[in-house]
Length: 430
Picture 1 (tube, rainbow, N blue to C red):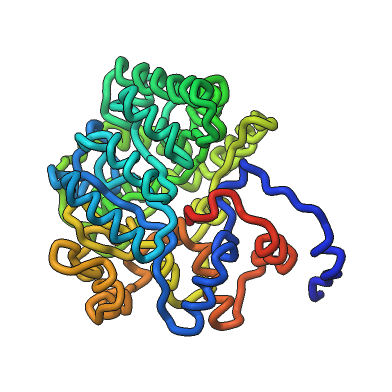
Picture 2 (cartoon, helix red, strand yellow):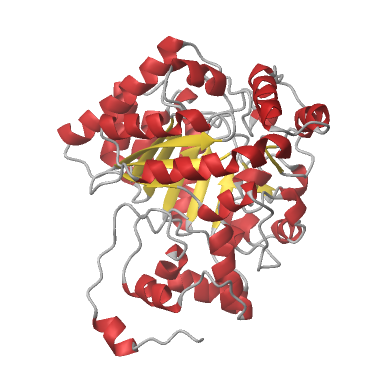
């Protein structure tokens, strides 16, 4: 049955935007000028640029999806300033500082954050939280829209398993999160502070206590995401050892193998097949437990604290997600700059040579964006090289619906009207 909407009633209704809904799939509708320009001309400048300042990282996460290219490549402060000014020139509205490596390993992170703020763009910071100095904390609290710390644990034991770091580092990270909350109060800032938690069969036992810890620390939210890994060899090894006996007792054996795996820092490049980790024989027996724990975490919510997770991405623990859209369009609205000043469509295709859009050491951002080189690179995008679903999935679904009139059942006309009428929280961060 078609959805019936009284347009006059909807347009007259007073609507407020929850500051907790930071992952709205309709953010692009707050940028109708860019969307319409793209729909008409097939080209528009990006709203958001994710900028990897450095490939250096202070942690040794065994399952890091960026470990293929962690090294010492770093954009100098002068190069960073020049790039930021180029982004300002073409109308970029927000810059996300993440990785790649960890941005706190960049010697001039504080100054970069301040420079972005001084030039009228929004800035966010994603970090493991270990090297958050008082200067960086003050800079991000005064200039940032949001900061998110990858906590991924409820205590030192799980933290070591996840981040490869000792107990004192866990306590340092927790202390720095508390410092962020205190600095926000001291500087009367409205920066949003959050933590993330990667959940899988080998981490599900800690998610509720991690969420409770986050709430106790005074952050605004915890974002829980499912594990993905590019590591086919390790996955296939565990699957092979478990294929003959995928019973409940074998789950514990497989979990132990996962924890004990010594994944080397030097590993073959991403091979174009996105894998879900842990393997199927481990994932399926734990799927219901994971979903139960997610719901239990939601019970911690109140007016000051929220728990969120990408529902579509968690569908992968029960089966493959089916895409409605046949092409990726969202790369027109967001892009990634790597630590060697090269452009890529997104973070999951970063450092993949066939998807390099251009090099900022050779051409300006404007030249690259209008170049045949960029067009040739993004025309090669193959969903086999992408996670399914990817974190930008919902934006692609919306753009496909706009371009082709074919949409998933999850796109609601009423929600679309709301999104056009009212600014979405963090609308510049897709």
